[in-house]
Amino acid sequence: MISSEVDIRENNIFDNDMWGIWSMSNSWCNVSMNRVFRNKAGGVRVGYRAAGKEFSPSIVELNKIYDNIGLGFLDNVRKCEVDGRPSANVDLRKSYLKSPNSLQSAKCLDNEVHNNKESENISQLNFAVPYCSNCRKKCEPKRCGKCFTAVYCNKTCLEGHWSKHKKLCKVLRGKASFLITSMKRVGGDGMIKRHAKSLEEIGPKFSPPPPRDGRRFVVKVQSSMPETDLKPHTLLLYDRSLELYEEIQSKVIAKLVQEFGIQCERQVAEKKLFLHCLFGKNGQPRLFINEFADFLKW
Image (tube, rainbow, N blue to C red; front, side, top):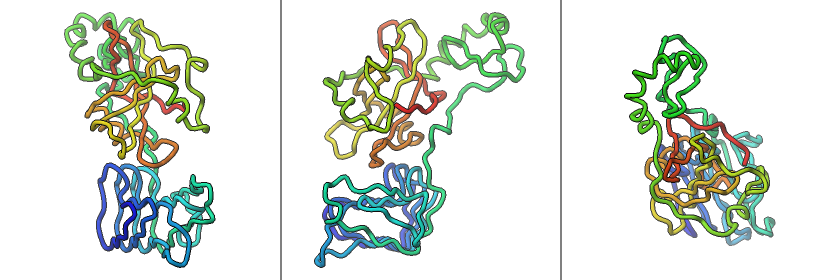
């Protein structure tokens, strides 16, 4: 909703790829008696609205806002409360605008806001099971260094099972990963300028370039803003050193980022996900999708 007036009442709003309800750019909204749940970016987001007698504040009341992946409620203007009490599900940031006193917050009354949180990469799509592929005993996952899927207790079990595993290794590698065959280098230092100050710094000064000998390394895959004129399923792919700093299009990876990623620091619509990656013989990056890398702070 942009520069509009909307009355949203008594709806079930769920399973959207972005916010359940998003009012922005000086819009007025009355969001009442809705159930807003299981939305991928958050529950209800209310943008800035000018202050003054001629502008009525937006109203968010009597809603049930729960189980969203992200914040339950976000008011972009000032500190806000739910039912008169500070809530862990409410973002307490001030507006980015220079004159917050010329803006007004939404009126938030009698909302039920609970269980809205980031996924933090806790969900994992893992083809491997924690049992040795050779002796079938439960073990700590020490994976085959080629497919990164088969699990072994130790080097002895790996060598003992290789005659059987080598027939499947290439197939398992294909199922566990996604080869990026087309990408476009992003020029300049735009990513460094956009990088949030709260994160660890990025660039060649802060990390060595990723290995090109078949070892895996960690990359961040980040979705783009929805209002940009980029092609569908456009993502930014980069490592901490920015040796890789590419624009890619992938429906598969974009779906993973939307489903399992966490919001970027602006908490608007972009999401990010950390994945394992390696360079193939032809220099193309291969992203592994059978498990996610640990969440990092850069």
